[in-house]
Image: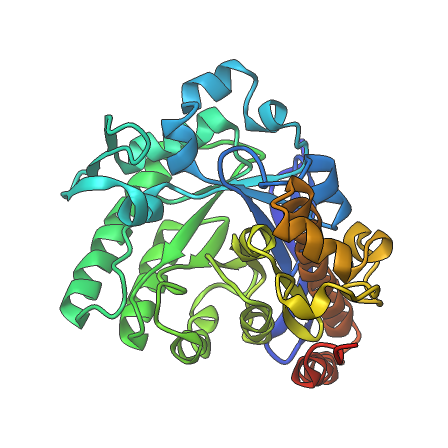
Length: 375
Ligand SMILES: [Zn+2]
């Protein structure tokens, strides 16, 4: 069995490229993970997600524990088999989504009680239960159970929350045990305070993890504050382990994070945008519902090789969105995920060839041009 490991192949400035080896295949880094919230990347068949170039998906513990339940997924042979995705899966711990989605949350040292946003049923989540659920799902990369205060929050609250998360990290490590082929990642907290981030990084390294996430960002602090933290946070984490920035982001967030030493990211944005008529292209954001597209025979992006751009006009994409046809979300999601993976491939190549700065300048220059002129 392939043991979980990380090969750092090249660095360019702080940007890194490498390969994470798992028992279900390799993950090329920097990696973008599409989000398969409830056992599906919405509007996409799993083979289509793979065709965009994704090496790994993210599954949400909170959603899956409520529906269909982790036990039911386990009885069906685990999440990979259940959703027909045989490449690696990372699951979050459920902690963040309990905080953002569940009703009537009650937090104490032991864990969190809450009511399901689906049917109001009562649930209890602890580090131990989160590890058990992620094991039942069969996740390849398991995340520690943590707590994350919404920003802005005062420093005392952020410090208390971070220290609770570090105690939960130890309990997660103990409960995870020894599972060859599976990885457990610790999550750094500490808000936007460098000293708290350092304290958290040190506590996590004392426990020892297979990878380290920068948590508690992309929660409303804005890009400038996020990049501010990323100036030092990745450096506080071990260089020989993957670094994962959770819940990020827009294309320029992703490029800025990789530039600062991040190896993995996930975000619902490309798939969610695809369902609301928003496309991300090398020339920025395109709103397909805009009337300017209704007679436009040109593709969304003539340089894109995805099915939406290869086979359909802007006029068609506009029409099916306006008509509320399902293929609208399918095509735009495919395009968006394809574009995100193209950014990742572009960065991997540029880092390997020591030309990341030039690649980044070109990325920003094309975006600055804006969308093609209207007809
Ligand atoms: Zn495309």
